[in-house]
Length: 120
Image (spheres, rainbow, N blue to C red):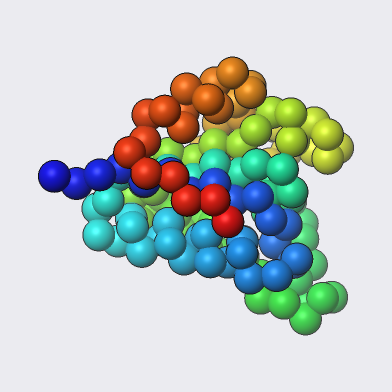
């Protein structure tokens, strides 16, 4: 029996390798048709900020990986409404239009829907 997996990405895209590792896990799971979801929480919502300049920090741009998620069958994309608001982002300006912005109460229910949860 295939178990569902939720990845919670809590790190900003340029604060280390955690954001990239979360995306790698999600893309790999999608490639193998694993029921998988991705939740952007805390500083992880910065991954969804538009017009990021990765070259300025000598980092690899993660936006191509984010845009590839639907091509890998990953359609369960979520962002925490509180995290988005606290970081001065606007839900309608997020780079992934597919990401649903959820209230805190809805996030608890979301986590309960998945068999396994990994937080990075």
